[in-house]
Image 1 (cartoon, rainbow, N blue to C red):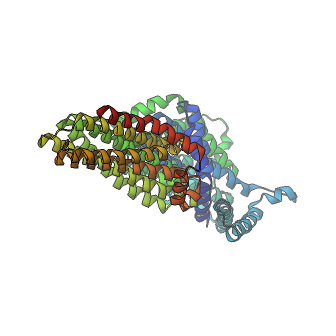
Image 2: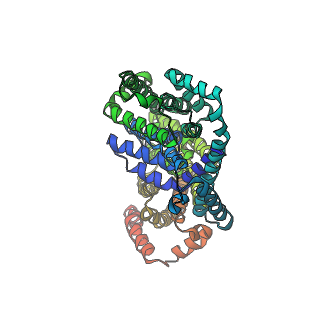
Image 3: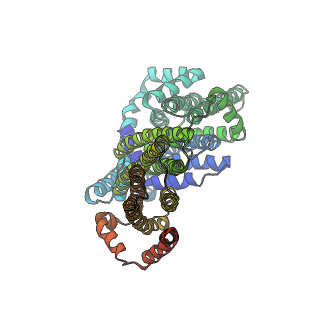
Length: 586
């Protein structure tokens, strides 16, 4: 019950605090002290240092944090994890008939929390309220389990065997470290291990000389989990984050152990070592140990980072297209951050697709095997990322809890597909450019000038669309549809002119087919941009997505003055030069 209560409460806290965590981490600076405070705050909120480190690994893999920032967060996580122990010390409250203190006793808080939590879960539908219900239920189950565990070990206080065993452990500090390490590795939670130790303290057989090495062993035990998290499917800096955490805890334990041993055998405070501790004493020592360790090692964070880089060396060659490698399943700890990083990855892929399409425009003028090879290689990377991103979002959908998160995942999956298709159009135009070279086809000066004008318009709509996704700028998304309408008009006009040239014998059939198909690909690219912009606008307005065809019809009828003004400006920018080009040719 104790472990399950921690799980439920932690889950509710994570769901409730996802957006807040994102904001806190988003404000992180290169200041190490602020990083430590951030790690401490995040861990205190989500009640798990492992979860904080998992999240940090995901963010460093996404490029949101650098290694030094991640190292400072890891240091703070060790301090934040002591909050659970400070909560458990409520078991020590002696109300002595005081009504106020009686309220804060676990025997009162546990049933009250359960009742409140169950009511919130049963009678409310809003996700935020249900998350709060989970927190209350988890808190109640945790303390119910803790009270049961305390009652179950109470008989050990009369057991001579248990007392003698605790006394032997107290005389061999190394054995205490091993016990704390092994138990933490088994149950995968330092907070839970400390909670068990606090429950055992109710027997009156736990002395301070046993507690301090066990606490150090518990901290070392968390390193095993970190090593596993940071070594599976992660980049170099993510692995180094795990190494920093291990080095931090090992150095802290060694330094503290040496200091405690010297202090113990110096003869000072002889009664301290045999003192029988309660849960509050254990919580205070754990907090003191982690706080002092952080204070001692914060000035040496650069040294820890350097050592981690020596242990985990860089690859000889920096991988190409590194911007696409931003998705890490560790981010599922916080779905809001996972969604945000997926959006960044898709925006990076969109930039690559746009760059390829723009390079394909150049090939229509002057074909280059090198440029063509780069476009094809980029297309392979885009396709691979699209598949990886789709799979990531499908897996993420199993971790989302709110309707807003589900809508975001669906929106990103559609945008991902739209950007991938833009990359496909680059290879289509590349093939036509290759045909022009191999078949000796030549466009007229008129046709090339026309293509240059519409390519300029398409490039602008592509940049607007990718920028809207990258920055979340709704104003950029609103400017896409007027330009898309103008591109449709340009395409129709150019196709009509092409037919006239064919009739007049000014254009060959081969050149005409390539010209028309190129226009089609450009128009389709602008259509994909319209689709993406619509998805961006629907992010904050569900009515648009519910009836997007009606929304577009109303826009095209001129129902909004802003749209009409932008449409006029775009026609002046692109249609009028196209019309003048025909006049000058005539």
